[in-house]
Length: 484
Ligand code: NAD
Image 1 (cartoon, helix red, strand yellow):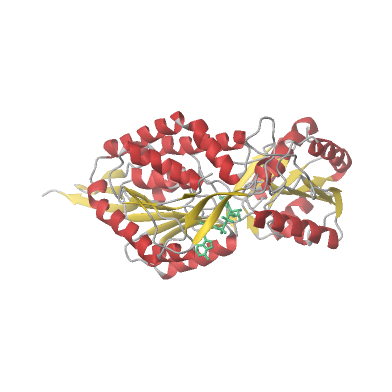
Image 2 (cartoon, protein in one colour; image 1 turned 90 degrees about the vertical axis):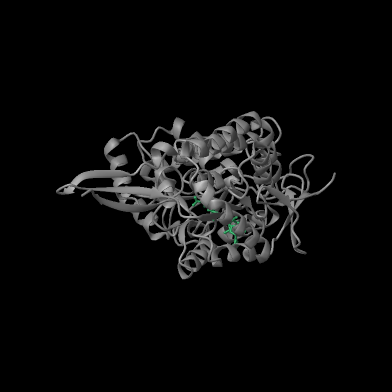
């Protein structure tokens, strides 16, 4: 099998990086190296910036109706190549094919949403703010934006940003995760075939050197980041230093609360997809289960039964419900948290270690794991594991559940399972998390809504997707007019 060395895409051309540093791209089901990502140099990032800068004025003065024609064509290409794109995603990331397909559905939805920019980018006005004087707001593009994205949704996350940015008239640079570059490479191959104007959309692979060059350049205006909180905080501060707009979506530790009145037949399947879907590597994955009052025993019993039915294996194969961790490091991190949970005194109800998957001895597999008798101060209840580990905490009432949620620094998502409207409303009203679910396991906002987040899960004010993205990628200019 030939190992592809992926290329940068600058000014409408595929460019081989001159770097001497590469990262292996590994199929996590087999452990095989399938590609290599160049860790591009500062100079290469600057070439992309200069291409995007040169393309800006022409693109921003292209009518919005013409700009979005490119997005419509890209959307159709995503539909045409839907299966092939989903397979590449599974190959490099490990998630099941159905999960990859779901990821591409949301990608397409974001492109569609951005294609409605002629209505989303409209400003507003008012006559006679004083006698014979009118005032209006125009939403103008700013220049060169870029995104820095994580390994868990390599097909979708860049689409929370770039389609909106370019639809508004900005030009753009995508910096994919160096662990999983292939999904973006395949998308850029389509973009290349479709003949997007040169320099409008560029891609630079790499790590900190490329990212720092993008932030430090006087010719970029803003960054969208999605990734871990420590890196996000660092880059948010750096953007501040360099006067850049920034929207930073960070890590998560999501608490799901089950009330005594919950409908368990429907709740438990939702919990399974929340905690174990995408092998626990969603920023919206359940991490801690708060079992309130008398639901604890029947819930625990139902969970153990359901967990044992989850089929783990190579996500490309039919019937598989949970793939491997996306990397060896991710697998080792998950295993070390399981050790930590045992050391700190939690009870290991279902042990996902030492799982063997026939034909895949080198895959990064950890089975679904459930800890019971977890205490809020334990490491497994506080830190982001980003693997298929459920920690159950028994609580006496809703107030205790909310206190535990609020003691955690993250605030990405939280859900309640209940049949009582008043309890649900109280949860929605009080819980400090950006995405709240009521009888929903994975609180994933559709493209027309912001992908929210609070506390240590988000830094900035405008989120990805929908009208938040449009506001992030535009500047409000006020014009006041009087005709003599
Ligand atoms: P990461 O922080 O390691 O990497 C994210 C990106 O930052 C990558 O492109 C990487 O190249 C770059 N990067 C890493 N270190 C850097 C540095 N020192 N300087 C400059 N750039 C650097 O995150 P990850 O492991 O790829 O992704 C997993 C994390 O992403 C989890 O914490 C997860 O919760 C989070 N996530 C959050 C959301 C959300 O919407 N809040 C969505 C998806 C993933």
